[in-house]
Amino acid sequence: MSRPLVVFDLDGTLVDSQQDLADAANALIVELGGTPVPVEAIAKMVGDGAAMLVRRVLTSTGVRVTSLHDALARFLALYDERLLATTHLYDGIQAVLDELGRVARLGVLTNKPERATHRMLEGLGIAQRFEWTIGGDGAFARKPDPAGLLHLVAEAGVSVDRAVMVGDSGVDLATARAANTRVCLARYGFGFRLTPADLTGSELVADTPTAIVARLRQSFL
Image 1 (cartoon, one colour):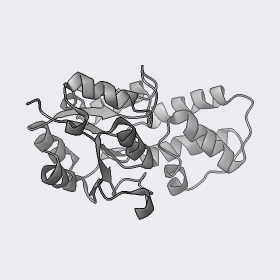
Image 2 (tube, rainbow, N blue to C red):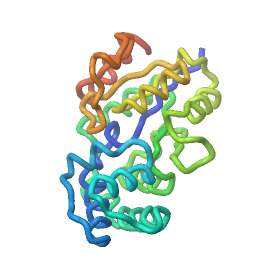
Image 3 (cartoon, rainbow, N blue to C red):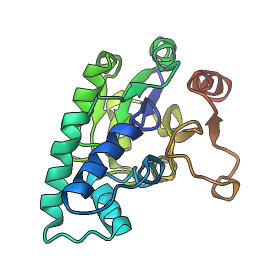
Image 4 (cartoon, rainbow, N blue to C red):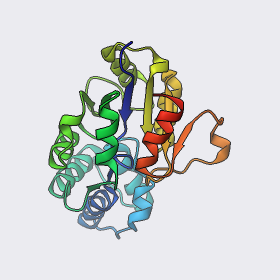
């Protein structure tokens, strides 16, 4: 039997990137004449890709621009300068990847642009852990569209019940549901805002990175 597939979200699941994302967003707002907003507020806007983050930040601060495209390009340039300033792996992620890599095939599926995704994974020393990496501006529609996840399932040669999406947000949950894969929710991540009403009880939930392995071993691996 083929090894199962474990697909990770990036921001809020593998890495804590909220400070660098917020710093870039606030730098954009200041350039446009607005007032910076708290890191926690910007972190709540992350998850649907850079364009949506910029749109939400502009709306929340009341800053108007003539071109959202230009604002997005400027944000990406500002973020590129700060990509790994404070961003770091969550404690325990290295061990999680070590252990899961022995029994499963690993991939990354994120709405972050691919160039930034590859730079981040390389810079943090974990790029080689993953057989596949799909970003939000690649060949597939962004999550929660299931196309990217289903592509990874096909590439791994497994059935959907032998694949699990590990992520911290409702976007990841919706992606797994749309693809009919299993899901493990990283409750420690900064994108986790799900309530009991959002869940069916069939979802795996991990309160820490190291708990991911335990939850997958109990119910999946």
